[in-house]
Image 1 (cartoon, one colour):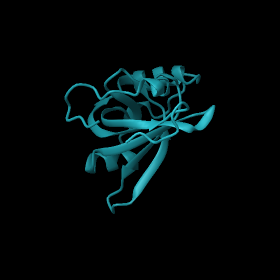
Image 2 (cartoon, one colour):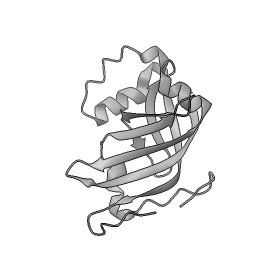
Image 3 (cartoon, rainbow, N blue to C red):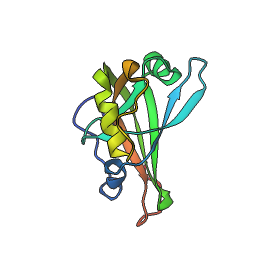
Image 4 (cartoon, rainbow, N blue to C red):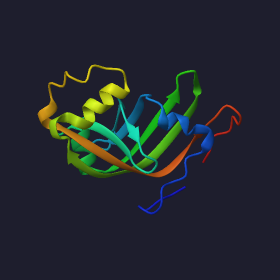
Length: 144
């Protein structure tokens, strides 16, 4: 399903838990030379926007500033063939004052929230999904 910042893209109900659980999302961005870069990232999802913590001084941040298109994939750790793919765009960034959002993610992922050495350069990436699909256990066909 495609979305141009209209209503939220529908998440397949049989895959919704993959966006709700504290799993690792593999985020792919486009490098300036056209190559791809993919890295594991923590995230939160509010039903319409995916948010991730990052820093303003790293390559992935510069990649998204140059080309806001992205894709991310989250696999179910109990069945790696069950996954959700989200295609979207970086909608906005905002400063993560005192790394408050990053600290909340650290708690969500079972980490100590007090240790954030790069707190001064932390930002929140707000990602607007434009398409969501994947594969689930009951139906082994890929959703397109």
